[in-house]
Structure formats: structure tokens, C-alpha cells
Length: 401
Image 1 (cartoon, one colour):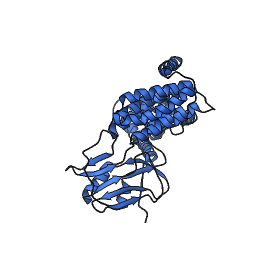
Image 2 (tube, helix red, strand yellow; image 1 turned 30 degrees about the vertical axis):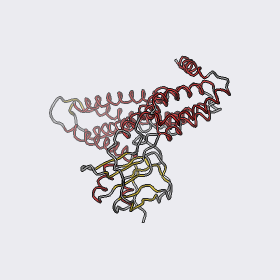
Image 3 (tube, one colour; image 1 turned 120 degrees about the vertical axis):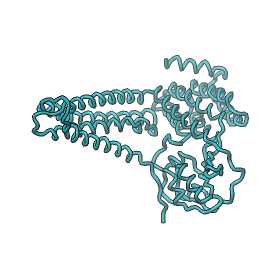
Image 4 (cartoon, one colour; image 1 turned 90 degrees about the vertical axis):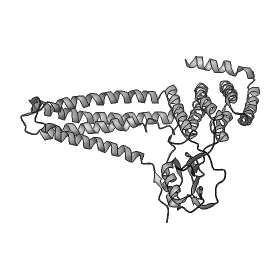
């Protein structure tokens, strides 16, 4: 029997939110016209206005979908197909759900009024207030869409998400046990490939505490689980594989929930696409390197260890593997260094690594030195002066301004 796995219900939550807005609109449409106190107005113009607003708002719903499609297509073709910040933005689906709820309210209220001669003035007032709120949401959504298709805001948003994840994941360390008891259960992935999006720490800690065991998750969030992979081990006792897998939320793509390398991957992808022969935009790569440098500089000085969680009594119950320093370098530096042929990119990358080295702990300098040595070969090949890294970077920034 296959263990049941947990998939992140993003689309389900978006659908439930929209359903909630529609139910709220239905309830308000049935209740508000029945209010018997307060000022009264003629029902004929109110009914006509409600039907006009309800039918007209269907165009706003189509506009939201069109905006979503255009932005996602633009970002996919211009930046990277893995960048889905606008698609997953709660504002998109809340605005869509709010528009649907307002449509339902207007049509339901018009039908509820029926043949009444007069109706409470709260009906048109509420409809106008909700319409103004929707207009404000649409304006915010439009500004958010414009930001999503511009390079600098997109890079800044990715880096901000990355810093948040790094601060969260690598700041939650508790005291690690000096030695784990023997592993008695091995959890193996028996399903098609899936991305580990999130480790449900609270659920796994509770399960481990109840069974008096320690769970070690060997794959870090963001990794792809393949059939036959050893996903986790249970130390010090028995715990079913199904229980462990229920605490691992998987999906089809990486998310910013707990993935420390996703922001680095996205920034590197944008830089690599800009270096392709079809695009040939090295200035974009240098601009992406500015944000990469900040994230890698943070990682160079931080404690990059596995994530340890203890229960209320201080007993270690959950260990989650997280990427180490070499994984950050391979993801953020190696591909760009291999593809770099432009003098400004080679000089910019070399200058970034030198500044990261200044922030790095001593034991991490060796990995940076190896990459700097390879870049020195490219500097010689391109007949660049090694001291030109800063001037070239400044020239690129001046061109972008």
C-alpha cells in the first residue's frame, strides 16, 4: 500500500476564497434589501443600476484573467519560467474573488427587490462602496502587474523573498543532539517525481514526540524527490512511513515557503538568459549579480547547518537537511561563470566574488578562491586588467541609470 502524500492546496485555497466571496455576496444580496429601517428610495432605478453593475463587472473579471495571462507570459519569456510571483500573489485571487462576490451581490439584490416599490437606501450605498473598493483593488493589481514585468522591481522582489527565507530557515536552529540513536525506519519515495515544497515541522514534531523518536529529513525543501530516493530516517524507535510522508508537502514546482536556494536559482536563471545568444544583454546579468552578491554574502557569513527542532522538553525530534555553502556557490555562481564571455560580466562577477570573500568566514574562502582563479583565466583571455572590475561595474550601473 502506498503512503498518502500531501500536496500544497494552493489552487484549492484560492478556489475556496473565491467561493467565500460569492457566498458573502449571495447572503448580503438576500439580507440587505430586507432592511426595513432607514431612508427609502424608489426600487426601479436601484434595480437597473444593480443589474448594470453586475453585468458590467463581468468585464472586470475578464480583465483580471487577461492581465494574469499577459504578465505570466511576459515573465516566462523574458525572465525565467520558474518565476511565478505575480501568479501566486494573493492579491490576484482576492481581487478576482471580490469581483465575483460583487457580481453575485448585485444580481441577487436586484432579484430580491423584485416588484417592491421602495427599497432601503443601504442597497445602492453598499453597492457603490463595494464598487469603489474593487476599483482600488484593480488599481493596486495593475501597479503590481507593471512592477512584475520590470527588471529592477522583479529582481528586488526575488531578493527580498530570498532574504526572508534565509532569515527564517537558518535562524531557527536549536541545540543539536551530539549523537542520534540508531535508525530503525527508512522512508523511501515510492511516487512519481515531485518537489518537496515544505516540511510541516509542527506535525512531524508532534508525531515524533508521541512515538519518542527523532525524524531526520535528508532532502531539503526545493529538492526533487525521485522514485527510490531515501527521503527520511526515523531514529530511536518505530514510526510508519505514511506518518512521515504526511508531514512532507510536495507539488509540481518550487515555492518560497522554505526553499533557501530558490531566490538564488531565479536570479542566476535571469542572468543566464540575458547571456544567451538570442538575448545578448550582459548589463542585465550584471544587474542580477548585484542581488546575487547580497544573498551569497549573507550565506557566506551565516551558520549554514541542518535545521534542528526540539520538543517542549528540549529533546531533539526533527532534523531537516538544508543547503550548504557549496550548494549556494554551485547554484549562484558556476553556471554564470561558465557562460560568461562578456568583459563586463566577467569583471562584474569577479568583483562580486571578491566582495563576498571579504564577508565570508575563513573556512569558506577556499571555494571562492577556486572560482576566482578560474575567473582570472577568463580575465587574461579577454585581456582585462584585474583591477578593472570596479570601473566596469560602475560603468554598467551608470548605463542602467
